[in-house]
Length: 114
Length: 146
Image 1 (tube, rainbow over the protein chains, first blue to last red):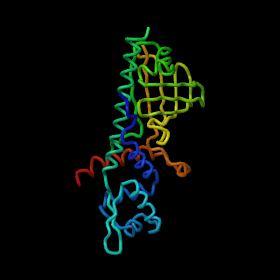
Image 2 (spheres, each protein chain N blue to C red):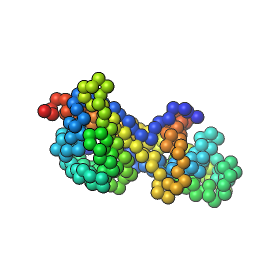
Image 3 (cartoon, rainbow over the protein chains, first blue to last red):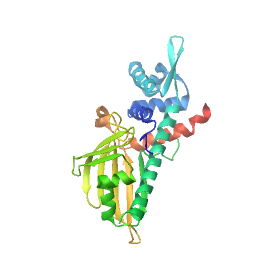
Image 4 (cartoon, each protein chain N blue to C red):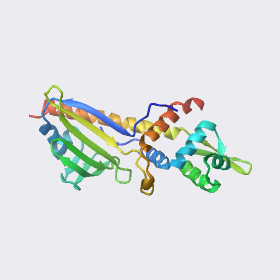
């Protein structure tokens, strides 16, 4: 057992890192509340420049959290919730690992140790 | 917004019918670690700043001991999936079990939502639970929309 210590660590790490920035968390909140928005729309809602918004959207896209769709001159972004689910299941998997380890420790100490 | 956060930490408790010294030894003695953790190889340099090394078939995890207070508390920071992946902190707390027979062992692994170094300066206190709520909200609520 324990061939893999951390399933999905790549994706989960990227999700957590992308969400470490407070502005990106606000963008995620806006996209989750309003549905797809352009960088210009998001910039207006959050009160930062369009350029700064685009930079954050790029980071969210790189982490797989946002998907851009070309719409005429602008790109409209929407959330992809799958990576969030992966991050969550990764946490569950690590919890399950600790369950097994502590069961193993208890059994080892109570049955095998002198 | 959901009010039930998915915490940024994993916390587990177990009551073991042996004394704290025995539990401590199992947590810090490489030969015992190999048997219960279980790992193929284990190396322990038990001092603050000393290295922890655990090896499985495909994964090697290295860590650094941060706190050593036998037989009460053991803290290390490690890369549980290999050095190229993020590190988390593992904290073991040993206490006498409530009924006096044995040890209550608590393990907390935290830091999954650790901030990249450049963002630490403006780290807000609420970030950890905020992330948990956000992930919880997005996984439970938004999924139904797709």
